[in-house]
Length: 378
Image (tube, rainbow, N blue to C red):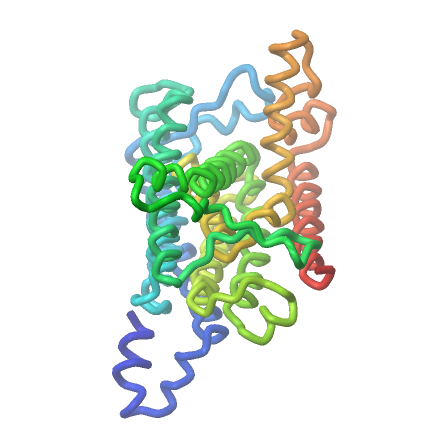
């Protein structure tokens, strides 16, 4: 909105407003705006959640030290989503289609998380939505995102080619374009690989962040690091010179997502102010699913899906630990970890919560740096 007003409309009259055309300037101010929004409205949100008695339900079979957190206001992810979307709307180009795609993904996955939290808090069902219901709505949201990207691919604003790290010559197109267009059902099948891939990335990333959200500040701290890495990657992918030099997929329109990622950084830092140990508020599923969906969508748009295991390395480890634990117990009736997700395993080993959080943040930073180093190794 500010970009449209101050640059597109007022720049011809007030020439200093040309500074609003620069992504770096708008990203910095979007990040600061998101930070201030989160800091200023945070106490109000916490107060209202307490008034509505929207408190966290703590499992009795989990670490006993967490029982004292029962009743802490949850659903704080609403604050995160607001603090991300408002600065994005203010500082980004409203005509950019990718901004709308990522905003939709954030809202859609956030809405699924909101429904899950609402059932937990209001109906007192500790598990919230059933697994099948949650996966269905996540898959539907992912399918809509995939469909939008296919449309953008058709009008030459996006590419469905998959970029493989460390391999310059590998650029697989996930759309089967060889199917005859005269056969409708075959035309639909042509979208299948891309749709499946996008659904896997979005559903996987959203649930991975959700599983990481178990300690004060753990998930949001890792999100800050992942969002910083994505801010760098989105800026590089939208810059013709840098993208060409680093052999990245160049898309000048996707560069506008730098502002969204900057807003995610600022909003996450602002939320961490209240979520740091001991937490005054939890993000809940509304926050974790929204952040995971946003991270996955940005990675798909800029063609860095295969870097997600590095960008969000801790998220992946947490999700894999749960899958291994469940699979091992079903097949062998034995557990690999003392408790899953992985952060609870280290708590059971005797690590203090603060130590687990700090060390996982360090791990997240190492993973993010590895993701950025792969750019030069191509």
